[in-house]
Every structure is written in structure tokens, then in C-alpha cells.
Length: 358
Ligand code: ADP
Ligand code: MG
Image: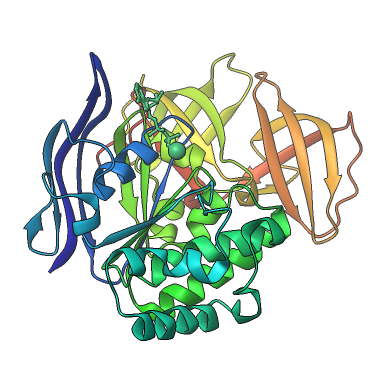
């Protein structure tokens, strides 16, 4: 049974609709990441689940209860914010235990729970400190501890690592993955960072403009993006896109001419018809240097990373693409280059940005 369901959930601020009908099922113990660009409605959706934002229409169910009209504290959820929201005058011990104290939990029970959580989060040595005496990562850990101690059914995280530096973010990411494993709790995590989504999620929910774009495992989304938005959003470096028109189809291969007819590319013909305008998506790691390659251009920029070489190429039709070539390639800026790709590397989208139906 689902732990949490959203049914046709909408949110309006006055005339403006920011969440445009979301349906979603989250299973018990799942780590679900809401990802999308800034302003797409991630926080609004999370806050509606938390009860901090009214639901304009639709239904949110947690466990077997519709929670639309249930107070935040009675929903069995705990939320961790980007701005840790710790009480500055209280010690770490009191910050973590504050919710339990409010709920009237006995002192000895409270003490045991606070110490258990401190142990899980490896912050036993910090319990007497005030927030001002902690690093950013330690403060975030306290904020997470404050959520854990309440033993919620569902954890809600809103970009909890955004204020941390890159190295610490990676550490905390691993810590969160470990916590999820240890607690076995349902977690919903909001981020605009697709790498964070890919590394943490059992299930990724991609949002754009208040509309759900695709739901799937990280590899589902990477291997089979349902539309142009997901294709461009998931994966690093970003997928390349070349537009063209189908000239001919022979068997299961379509010949696609670029806008200026300077290149003709062979792609799988599934679902395509002659005359159709399409976008061909190819990931940077799907390209290789090939003297007979169908993509022709001029090398603009070479980034030698040691393990691979990232090359920026201006194609003859003016499109700029990125190739991530294995190992150390000695390519010169300004030199002509030809790149090839396997048919299996092609992602085809129609003029609506959707995968053509087979
Ligand atoms: P995200 O978390 O994905 O960056 P938000 O959920 O914060 O996005 O915001 C989604 C959209 O709703 C944005 O366009 C934002 O400007 C708008 N919005 C958020 N809160 C309010 C509000 N209180 N009143 C009006 N518009 C709002
Ligand atoms: Mg937000």
C-alpha cells in the first residue's frame, strides 16, 4: 500500500496556478526526490504535503488518512529546511529535544531519544554547543536530528544541502543515504540539482512549470526520458540536441537533414514519417571521434580532465554540441572534427518535444 498519495493536487495563488494537477504514489520506505528548475513548484508541493500551504484542490493522503484538513503537527511528517531554522539561544541538546518537550514527552524518555539521535548523527560531542558554535554541516545535522527525534512516518527535506560547500554536500548526501537505509523511513527530498537527485533517489519526480514531467528510477529517466525537458534536465554534461527534417525512410533507418541541409544523419525510424520535423538528442558520452562520422564541425574548446576529454564543437549547421571522449584526446582548437554515434544513443523527439509513439 502507498504511504503517501497525491490526487489531482492543485495550488493557486490568486489567479496564478503554480501546481497544475499532480498525481503521485509514494511507497513506504521510498526515497523520492522532487527535482526541477527554480520556481517550478517543488517547495510549494512539499509544503502542501507538510500542511504549511493550503491545498487549493485535490487530495493528499498519508497512511490511510486524507490530510488536507489535518494540522501539520498531526500529519506524522517532519520537515528539514534549507535555512536550518535552529533556535540560536538553545543548545544542540535542547534544539533536538524541543519538539518532544512541547509534546510533553517525559524527561528521561526525551533524554534517551536525544542521545540516540546524536549517536546516529555522530554529534554526541556537540550536544552542549549553541548553533553559532557549529559549522554549516553541523547545523544541518542538528536540523536533521530534530526531525529524526520525532520519529515521523515521512521526512520532508527542502534543499537541505544547498547552503553547504561542494565537498560537504557530497559527505552529507552519503550520510542521508545511510540514514535512509538505517531508519527505513519514507523520505521526500526537494532539490534543483539533478546530480543530487540521481545519487539519492529510489524514485525521481521531475517537475517543470507546476506540471509533472516524468516519474521513474534514476536510470529510467537517464535511459528513457519521456520528453525533451527531462532529456535536457537529467544527465551531465547535458544531452545535445540537433534539429532536422526526415528526408527518407528505408527499413528502420530514417535520413534526417539538418535545417541548412549541411548534414544528413541516420537515426532509428521508429514512429517517424517523411517530412516530419524532429529533434535528435545524443548524450555527450554517446559521441566518438570517427573520420566517417555524420556530425561535422569545428573544435571550439577542449577541456582535458585526465580521465576524459570534454570537447565543445560548433557543427556546420551552427548548433553547438559537447562530446565527452574517453581518456586523453589531443585535439586542437579550431581544427575540423567528425563525430559519430550509435543508433542506440539516439533519443528522438517530435515537434511537441515528445517521444514519437512507435
Ligand atoms: P521551487 O521550490 O521549485 O523553486 P516554489 O514552489 O517556491 O518553487 O514556487 C513555485 C511558484 O510559485 C513560483 O513561481 C513562485 O514565484 C510562486 N509562489 C510561491 N509562493 C508564492 C506566494 N506566497 N504567492 C504567490 N506566488 C508564490
Ligand atoms: Mg524551493
